[in-house]
Each structure stands twice: as C-alpha cells, then as structure tokens.
Length: 241
Image (cartoon, rainbow, N blue to C red; front, side):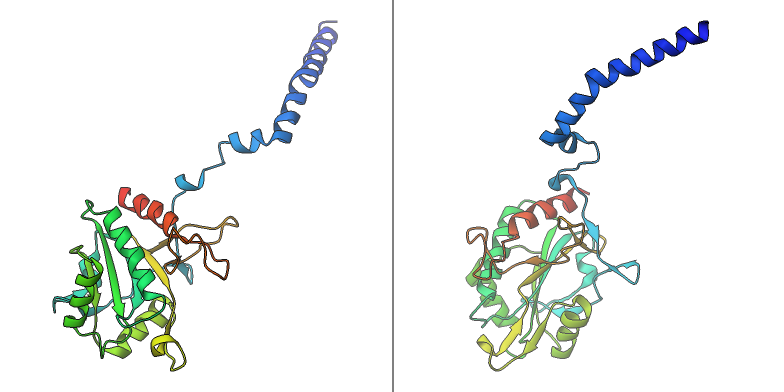
C-alpha cells in the first residue's frame, strides 16, 4: 500500500510540474528569453579572441628586420610584449592608404596612454620610401607613437612578408592607382607575437580587419562594413590579457 501511495504522489507532482512550469518554459522559448539568458550565450564583446591556425598550429608573426623612419633597425622581437597592428602601404598611394593611415592615427590616439600598443607599417615601394620620406610622411599625418615604426628595406623580403608571411596581398600593377595593388587589411598581433582574430557569427575567424573603411563611412560602395570599431574592442581585450 505504501508503494501505491508513493506512486500516486510522484504522479501528482509530475502533473503539477507539467501544468505550471512547462507552459512558462514554452513562453520563454517563444520570446527568445531562454536563448538570451542561457549561460552559454556570451555577448560578442566578452568573447575571447581566437588564434589563426596553420596545419593545426597557432600562427606567429614571421620574423622580420627592416629600417624605420629614424634609420633604426626594427625586428619582430622589438614588438614582443606589445599588442600591435600590421599593415602594408606606400607613401605615394593615391587610393586606400590615406584612409588606412587615418584609421591607424585614430587608433594611435585612442590608445595614446597605453605604452603596450604599437603599429608596424611596411612600405611596398621601399625603393622610393626611404627613411627620410617615411619620416616626412609620419610628421605630415600625425604619427607620433614611439612604437609605430614605418619600415623600408629589401623589396623582395617585404613582398615575401606580405604575400607568404601574412597572406596579405601586395603586387606591382601598372594599371592600379599609383602602380601598385595591395590589400587594405590590418593584422592584429598579441603580446606573444601570435596573430589573433574575433570570429564571425558562424564561428569562423575573420582573420584580418578592414582598414580602408572609417567608422564615419560605415561601409564602402561594395557594401563592406567598417571594422575599426570592433578592432578597438579587440585591441583592448588583448591589452588586458
């Protein structure tokens, strides 16, 4: 008899649960509340940045050594312990480089008081962009961060760094504006020299950040959206790691 009454009570409890609780759960699912409140749902700003993998290994910045605007030799080792951005540009570029520089100067100013932030700019016209030319370009554009090095050097080594080291396209093209074609992308590097990136809504790394669209523009005429705003967030994350 005791077992019989136990079964009855258990059945009654289940019935009450079904009547009271389940409809509430259904309502929350319909309204999206369960998804938003789920502990596995992490807002984009709070997600940790991923690594770029190559053959299952985290990709590091390739080794480099070039001459900067102050005629000093700068290598990848000089950036260890800093969060920095990598770009490929040239001072006589009539198209995307001025926008890229404007964005980098804005980021420089945004992180002005953080000594662990820097920029590595590599000229793809090193035969023209001498240290003196780079120095004048820096002064003209308000580049003042001591850890922002505009670098020149062996042309083949710079193109190899761009195309093979980073897979950021750069090439001589007579029909292109200024005679050279290059990607307007920024690479984000962490304090240990690893290339880092946030992921898109499908979980895939965006790898590099669009540098040729300003926050004010919003998007370009191809419908590509600016990524400087998210780059600010991601630099901040790495600086705080």
